[in-house]
Length: 159
Image (cartoon, rainbow, N blue to C red; front, side, top):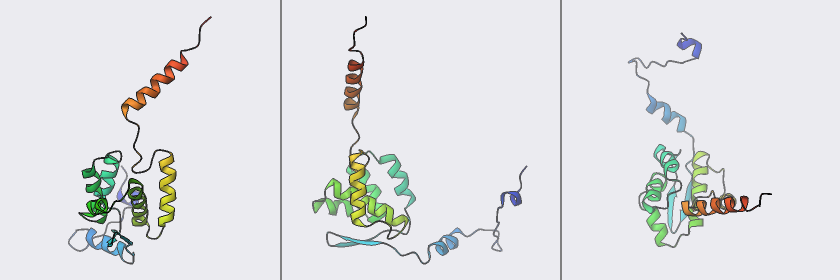
């Protein structure tokens, strides 16, 4: 059996036998600068790191076009009513996609992606059908493509 020393485990005892993750995580985040941006007359401050709820929901809801799903994800990044405010101001799908790319990158590493670079990344992903807001083909469209391919492949005559 492998013991803790072989694994290189470092036990930190704070006198009462309790590891204090609150203090550890607070220390880890010291010195990080929060990224802010302005949109439609409001200033938004991104969290210091991607909230777990955002990451979990992004995976589960990435192809959803239900506004409530998007609203739930954005709540963790920019607050409760941001999506509604942006929609009322006329935000487009492309603009939302650019903002999501910008926000996710800059939460991970502040200052790492400019708005212009986020737009380039969005447009590249949209061309590949991968960008937020770029809808995946629905089942009927996928079936039609498969059926058309099958007809073409079987159209040759056997001798």
